[in-house]
Length: 50
Image (cartoon, rainbow, N blue to C red; front, top):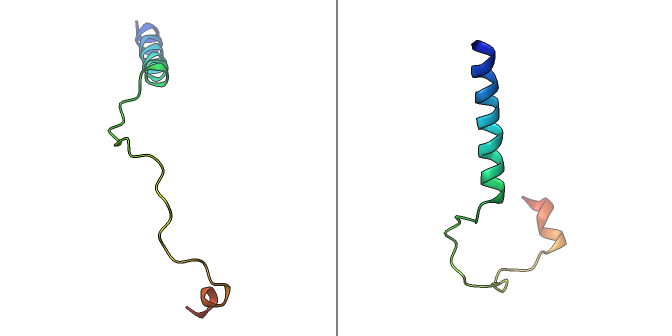
C-alpha cells in the first residue's frame, strides 16, 4: 500500500512537470517588442574608482 502511494505521488510529480513544460505559456508580459538602450555607455576608468 505504501509503495503504491509513493509510486503514484512520483508519477503525479512527473506528469505535472511534463504538462507545465508542454502547455501554452501563461506569461502576462506585454507585447511591446525590443526596447533600445537609453543608458550611459561603460567608461573603463570609472569602474574601479568606487
